[in-house]
Length: 294
Image (cartoon, rainbow, N blue to C red; front, top):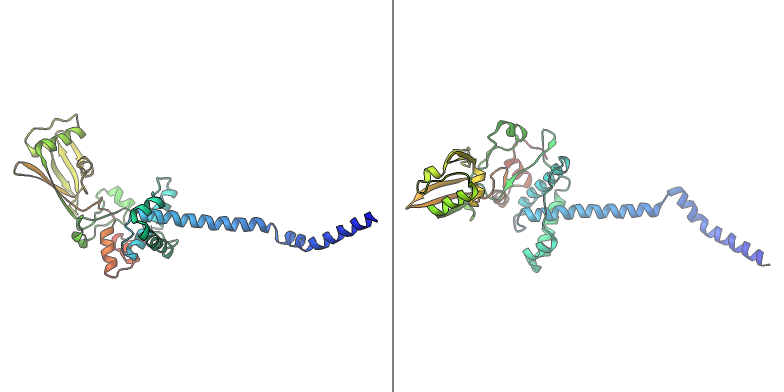
């Protein structure tokens, strides 16, 4: 009797489970597919999150949406370029630092704004001659952006042409004037180049600008027995840009600096002003980078 009951129970279990078994065999491992879909969604969210935090590190969240969208495309392009060419990838800010930077009240609103800019430009990158390129940018130009003076560099980055960015003159970061005593000036140079002999009083013999590019950024500075780049001199004196002039005024050394950043590619301040005037992010990118495709 017990054997008959066991057999009957086994048949009932088989009958109940049979439809599920057939579905499993026909459709495959649906549990695994579901897990994979969930994981794919998670990865997509992580990619978006990463770009949001890169964008937050590169441009103020209070900027106009079209300017932020232009920077979002730059961030995505530079990330793709770095990955393709095995180079250092753009770094983002952490969520905690962003929250601290913006404050609790503004954080969620600004985060959603950045997220929207990433999503509205989803998948868009800049190419030139059908290749993903590296896009330099800076905060404020010296009135116009720079183009590469070296022929080999220009061939590699033909999209970097000098364009007017006159709106930058309105930025509070456009102009900076600093004064140094001759002793302070000489000591900074001596600390950077201890092997060189710098005269006590003669500014022209201590240093002089030798060459500028078409946007007035300094290309070369002459030191006693040595020539350095404008960017090197900028680092020695912690200047905002390499667009500077040096002059003796009443026994002191005056350095006047224009712009903020290296001056190549998109001016972020200029982009924001263009956005205020109604330009789209595509128009902004196509203005600052010549002959590109999105």
